Image (cartoon, rainbow, N blue to C red; front, top):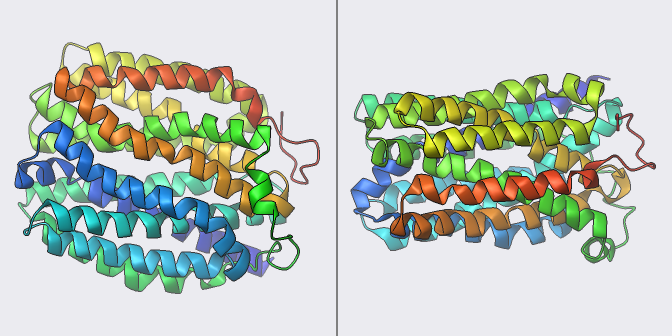
Length: 389
């Protein structure tokens, strides 16, 4: 079991650092908006850069993992992703165009890194015989909390966005490729026919799981990108309080993801994610319609609580059959990350004509759809890992 234990630690490292890198960027979005003098719609276009890179990278990640293995894909993706953050830091004083280009590179690299770590997480989950994917995603959330709190500290200390992101990017590019050397070999590498990746795109269940995860990804991405901006601009909160609201949202997700396996073992995937979707809708209603900053932050906590398990449960559902984990997780991720393509500019454009908080009503609608199709994540009968229904 020593190889499996080492692989578990390596997967945790990949998830934690991925979350830390993303939240380090997300925590400074209000300052980027101010430094570049962007309207909400223009900020949406800037955020569109990382979304485009992600959506381009995701469909390609399955074939890359099939050919080179998740270890190499995550090593290269994390290295290039860290360099992308450094490029953002260099481009920010120049203007919008270099920032968008750097975000596209970072988005592409982090997308392949994301799918690779989820495929490896599913392989480890199958190997040890119990569901731990929510805890891997809790590691991601823990990384986002650390990144957001780091952002709070950088704002409070008046550290520039460029200096902050340059240091984070260098640490990521140099550190994570070493940490993931303990990944297990992908069993699919030499067994899976080359047409399985395309065939996964025709599977009804796989596509439904993708739409299910899309709704939760949209809700998570909207929180990451817009909670700080909404608190500062719509509620009049100080910048540090806006970033603290994001940290509260991310902390709630982390706690629920860490305790998620016990909930899933007792009640099953479908009941848990449907119940949590209702909690998230209630939190969003508080955030959108609440009268004070305090009620909005309470809403952000409930919002994060309710969406915590949607993404990891969807990844586990896509990987129920280990022989097809890579192509199915790639498809689910590709569909889900369309939320990151449409979400940031969509919220920004709606917010331009009303307010960011009112634009978040779209998230409530998508979570309602996810609750309706949640039956798609019920475990396959052929799954070799014992998971409750």
